[in-house]
Length: 244
Image (cartoon, rainbow, N blue to C red; front, side):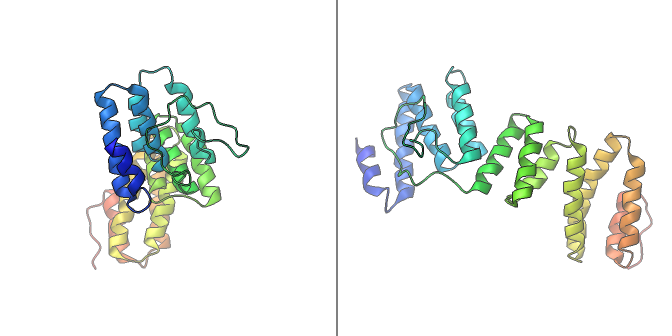
């Protein structure tokens, strides 16, 4: 009761404190083995901060429950469309939400997240579940909509390198070109990281000739950048170092 009273007294002026009190209520529900109430609080956390980590906690709370498959569909639909399944829709019709109402409730204007962050979380969850065709589909949407989040491309490229190597190569090539354009030695070293990823993909696919062609193209295009040429030589396996 004190947690509930404290939550209601602090939610507007001290939301961080209110979240801590909500957490205490969840911990008490866990101790009392109230599985569905725990899941309701985990869902509340997910809607407030829709990330792959809060998704994993929600999944863990219902991992052995027959309610999970339906609830999973609902939370994924929320990430893609923005409508919370635990609240009435635009027409005032309540969704078929399988969890109880928690003892404390955050204001309904909280917990939607920006479209770009929700889409990034949707992609991260697809990576987690190894649904790589879906990862590619969603990532193409973010690129067309220009809502790609920080580091998302790198995560996608790493995840689908074996199943969709061409997409990974295109993502890494764009990173390489962007870093080279900075004309800084440190940027060249960072570009080398992505080039090494590309080399692994080319080698795994028996496409060494394409790898060598890429190095030749970069050498020719940027032949005036001696520090970059040093990096490219190290990637090609050559031991001779170009004089500075």
